[in-house]
Image (cartoon, rainbow, N blue to C red; front, side, top):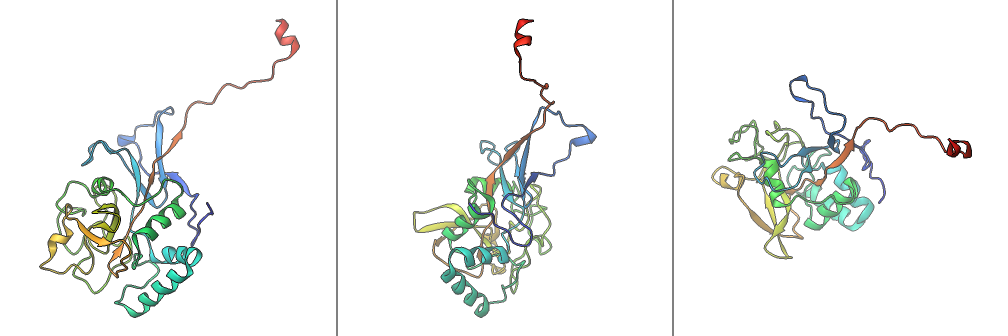
Length: 253
């Protein structure tokens, strides 16, 4: 897999997730420390909605438009031209830091692996719900208000514009619907979270447990995605003792 780099973001840029020890405690050097890509956060099964779901990393925000367009231009020029035309002709959703939109389900999956490496994909519904949390909505407070979610708006906000929820994830409620792994069949796939185009009177679209299905080849100004990846492991233990090659003299001792 080629490195994918846009504005300094590399598919090889894995770092330790920012999880400092509680109460100033030091970390046992023999403990396995989870790590995630710098644009992702670690999700532990401990205390999660689905506690039997293995640990994973998920995007802090929805994927930005500039990076998705760079991916399309390299992998599918005809799709790049189609989406470029839609961005120019459609509602005000265009912008480098706006969420990727007009994204097909299969394109989103390809992008996740291209950017984050083998094993990266769209989240399963259980992963998405773990990152959402146990609130009525996937917001910082678990409630719905304009300071925590982008909805009933003229267009989406830049990714990362809302406060992070308790799972340290942003944009989960509103902004754009998010493709996930799952659906009715091979044609109809699931979206979660609602969008900027969810107007008052349809607020149930924004509920944490609401599910909607779309044709997987659908391109919409209100549908985007975020990615998940396996949690990496960084083991920091004591150094191994130095060794030197044995010699004949050593064997005689």
